[in-house]
Length: 74
Image (cartoon, rainbow, N blue to C red; front, side, top):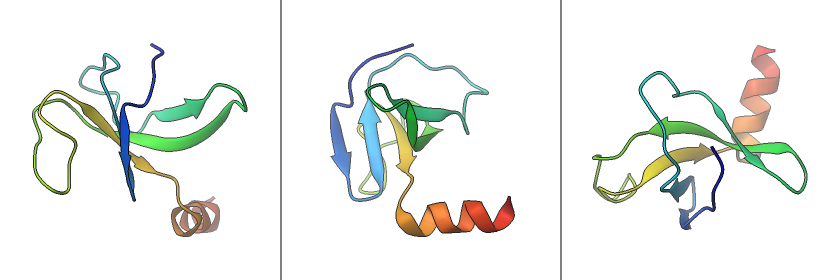
């Protein structure tokens, strides 16, 4: 599925791209660079200051600190 990021938070990207159960952990790619920029983590229906709105899916941004953790595990 492809689409646009609708808005972002410091550690999260929010979008209406269709997802289904079991897709958590999937990468969110930047098409111009084909690089993973986030990890899909939240489906529609989770609202609150730490989540996207009820109508949006969300992904955790791959920040420098998260990238460093991932590289240590590798």
